[in-house]
Image 1: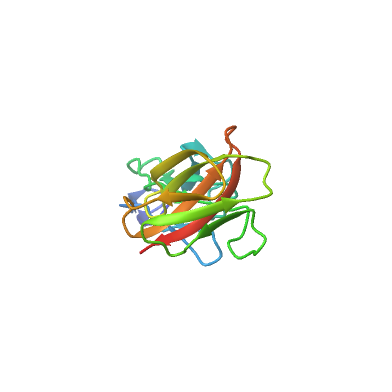
Image 2: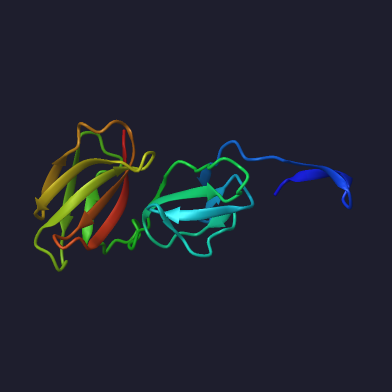
Amino acid sequence: MWGTFQGDYRRSGSVSATCPTSITIERNSSGSLVSNVQTNIQWYKNNTLITGAESPSYKPTESGNYTVKSSLSFCPNLSSANYYFVTTALSNTYADRKIKLNPNPFINSVSLNFINTDYTKLNLEIIEIATGKTMMSFRNIYPNYTLNVSPLKPGAYVFKFFSADGKIVHTEKLIKQ
């Protein structure tokens, strides 16, 4: 709690407290999410409380929508906007990737190929990094396929490939010019 006490604590006085007016989340250089409110907060993933996550920074280990809520009982209920955090299992820099996308950056189309995977076809969601919204979806993609992505506006996107049973096979960040 933030505030000051005025008066003799043994008799009477007044307490004044300052409640946060907004809560924001940013990502720092080490990949942790950081709240602008430093105390009396609780982190949530996909609207589910994360047990023990009450400090101003939190290091996610899974993709999802993260929020922070104020836990001060005498302040109005306050929550941050969703922050969509993406974890990747594979790095974009390895030459032996099983799924290859090019070019990056792209304009209207992206060529993809996948080799040596356990799948003969994959599904794809293209997620806008700024909003966390799925902007396009493709189902039953085969190797050596060209995606028409001309409807996307310029920006940064995550291409999330997954199998028919929903297992994430690969995620990769690409830029549309």
